[in-house]
Image 1: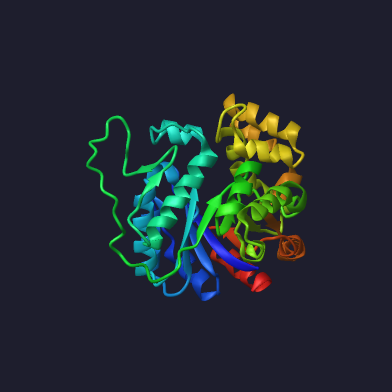
Image 2 (image 1 turned 120 degrees about the vertical axis):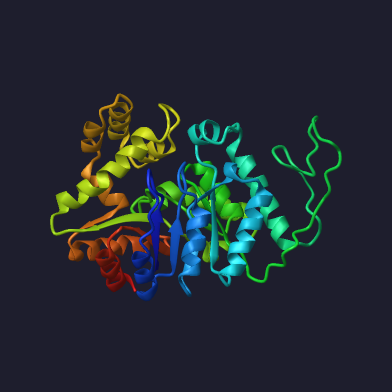
Length: 343
């Protein structure tokens, strides 16, 4: 199991702690990941990091597919991969209907078929075997809608890629996890529980690998969960630093009946807590929602407490399918502790 660093995204201000990134590189971390929501974008951040580092891989966790056409993503990914010497890991995700329709102004539609078409086009463009032609339900190259001019021309990427481009997908729902195992090179889960990996994620992963038609895919498949890590002698205080993040996603990142993170907590067996957290959060009772996050759930999806406790709990992560544990922490000392425990 390798280590990664996930620096996330920013809110009202943009700031990048390059000391955190360069420390991770010196400590032997394999990759650093940046995210985007509706603020800072991930590509600019990763470009900045690539220019100021030497060998650590740079990954997007994630680039929002609705924000860019497949061709734009292919151009961006190839450019960043070539300029960084083959260090780019392309992580993609569809996001949810609130962001897709509210921020990007596009229909959410059918997420799984759209994702499949998107990856097919990106790979076709990067491969450069022929001018890009695609006739799908969601994407057409050239465009053939009723308002088309008829002048669209199939084009081939001008740039000639010299490095492979791994593609990862963010997924937590069973159907999306299955699709990820079938068509992607790796998986970017959030709120991953190594204690539930076999029961909750095992069946859709196995079905996806089978559908891929590649008998060796499971052995090559990358699993890169982002995991909040808090090193603190006070376990309760450490849990309290993670609780707001979980409450925000389970409570506010979606609507009643359409919150993928809340659904995941339910599949983990926290139905009552998930309902209470969401109700409190959507009713404006944020503090109560945070307090309603169970200790057991924090312990399943995060690593918190004294170093010895984290060392013991790392055993479950090592025994799971995780290939890279992406540490979410703004603390250099925490990165050093994790490097001592893992690498």
